Image (cartoon, rainbow over all chains, first blue to last red):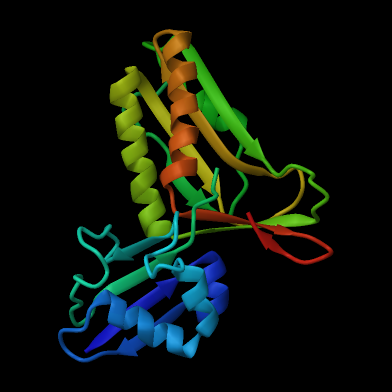
Length: 91
Length: 135
């Protein structure tokens, strides 16, 4: 299945603005992030804390909505849009 | 005074006229019009790039507007946030709140800018001679 990854600001500079990723059916959000990080090693350090959790202030949206569960339990579907957002600094 | 007009919620590359937005916001039931204007400060930078996840940011601004209207009994809330490349002194964000009385308009305006900074997927990058830096 294909999932669209959109990255913004600092994450966009590392991973590119939009990438279509092929994943096995039943893959989770953590699986997706592993695949992207393999192509962009710098992204792994930018996204995750040393304990493997998503870093403070970082937001990951699926289909433009926040996640109800952790990234290992979020099972993706064909056509999903996943957005990687560093800490906000607008205003 | 055109109370039938919807409030302005915009994310745009274009500059805006503060006077136009203030004038548009005025309405007969509001005795107070309060604005907040955020500008590019000269922190020894040559400019600033502003980026947004526009679809989500606009929806978040609308939600912040709706919450503030109810919480502070505001008559209107207008928000314009710019994206793109800006220079020192350029306008970044304008918020205009109207209310029957000044206290609500001041508090509402402060609440809106605080929530934008906290919740809206928008980012600023300082352009510096020694290298760019995401804020």
